[in-house]
Image (cartoon, rainbow, N blue to C red; front, side):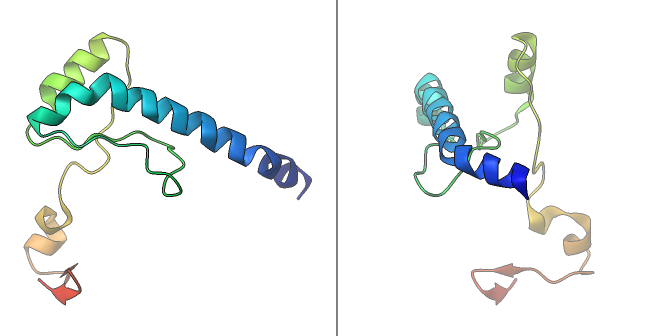
Length: 102
């Protein structure tokens, strides 16, 4: 209880700092928009930026390699779309798109 109360007092400060970092990433990656990359921030009142995500239109291998060579950690959080994952592809599980079964 007490630790959480102390951390909650700093939550807005932490989210603000993460939002500032996300804004700097957006500025640094702005040139990628013309290549179809969707940037990950800032979206006021929508994200606390635990991670900054880029959505890439094609393979991520070149970007991952370049970032890793620069000492920047990368991670594929969702390497496959939900409909492309095995349980959905082979019909074991239903999935919904826009509120209807696909």
